[in-house]
Image (spheres, rainbow over the protein chains, first blue to last red):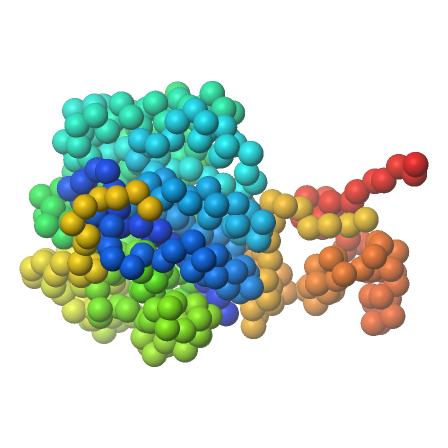
Length: 359
Length: 86
Ligand code: SF4
Ligand code: SF4
């Protein structure tokens, strides 16, 4: 069924299926692979009125759901006001959190919403392997948040793991850990964006590890992947999801200052389509020349002659870009061994504020 | 009275309509013009009878319309609220 959708979606939809909205660059942690290089807030992050305006336009366009991320979204004092507005407008929310602020009261509040998913980030099956990536104490705090959600009977909890060459060996343990909290497991691909650009070569799984993971995913169809492993599709079998790069076609990113980028992993001027302070989100989505271009291209030139092009379509644009390859090159983790890592191109987020302050 | 189940959301695209189900995270393309019209009129029609009458007036047979509604209900996409008279 999803094969058909891929053909229909290639040239773009009238509005995104979902957008990722990073509501703040502020974060209390400093994970080594942070996709958005978060830490301190950026000057001029969207205020609550502007957030409402954005939500209203997303609702008018019938965007199905919003992935709220950051930074740590719960650091915003108006976080629940944003959720309330989304709920009233009938937009689903999936939000990612490190769990530090997800206390009992917050868990109880969350359990009263419809169509809200919580993704608690954990990057290792035990304290040692998690904390080395996410910082001391972060594993325990995530477990406390998961326990709070479980005790509040919150029904849509996910444990969200960015797969690296260490934790890939423990997907079974991670699966068991999620089950212990009545949660689903969600694993996504490490991309070299944000601080991930610097840790990519050190943390990226090997081709062999990816092959084993692919097999594991085929046997664990209940594990969510955010459609992020489609570069492995040529290995055979069919993974869940659309299996395509949706950047500017079916998804995009709005960052904390209102800049719209092709996807969460492309925070760089080369992928900026506009800003919601300068024009409406609808205008950016419908008229951005950059998005037009993505909707018209047939995939990377050097992949066109590859026999498995239809299943992998040349892989992830962000992974190529941040490893210094051209968008016409194969994915750096191309399963046919045609990928190359040329260098490192870091994301360019707005200059941070000096202090981390609650909003 | 019929209403769209809160687990679903849909919108029109040039190839038909996209229906998204929150609990299963699945997307379905709807191409049937009749189903699209039923979904479109769910909110505005004051009662199920008037929804059916409206569609019959647009050329569908009553059987076609009720069958389509029954299928949508069986799939859990629309809810039929049974009200008790007070
Ligand atoms: S050459 Fe391109 S299309 Fe072929 S497997 Fe590699 S990335 Fe995919
Ligand atoms: S660029 Fe990569 S991360 Fe972004 S939507 Fe495409 S495949 Fe996904």
